[in-house]
Amino acid sequence: MTDIPKIVLFDLDDTLSKSKEPATKEMGQIFAQLLSVTKAGIVSGARFEQIESQFIASLPEGANLDNLYCFSQNAASCYARKDGVFTQLYSFTFSDNEAADIMSEIEQVLNETHMLDNEPSFGPRIENRGSQITLSALGQQAPGDLKKLFDPQQEKRKILRNLLVTRLHNVDIGIGGGTSVDITKKGINKTYAVYWTKDNLNIPIENMAYIGDALFEGGNDAVVIQTGITTIATTGPDETITIIKKLLAL
Image (cartoon, rainbow, N blue to C red):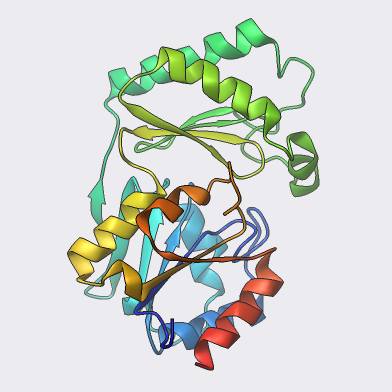
């Protein structure tokens, strides 16, 4: 890639900011510089409201938010600015019955495996986000240090995911973050953000880049590799700042 990408897509947690923590002032400033010269997208399992409070609120006044696209809930929904306000462009939402069935199956798997019986829960473990059902093993508000220790090799969540795959059909089930298993409609995962961008913003995939901390095999960012997008691995927000600076210097 010899020129700055026409759009740079980013994971959120442990890529742009620490998990569920506000982005730093330095990150906000460098990201605003990126938005001044090209488009950017955030592709996260979080709700849009979480992206807004965790990241967008950290951007300096005057940042070109018209160049920002937010693919929330692993691209099951997309938000962008229209007439100065972030507006939902699409959403693949589960019906009430679909959501209830999925949540019931998660409960049954947890009851049968007893995997989380001795684990603390900081808030609800199962959340209906509309376009995504999320199992957060330690609860939605678990401290970051505990999340890092829970399942660093994804072994526990792979067991849970594999059991859910045998019970749930016509859905995508992925491992996300440090403690999560995310369920979206079939075909809706982070790759959808890449293809949607190609089709709706008329940006060829070869003119895009994706930056994430989990591009390794089994990581929740790795699914985008199959699209052919240029991928750049990061170890966390500090390295992401360095990567953005290099992109801006091209």
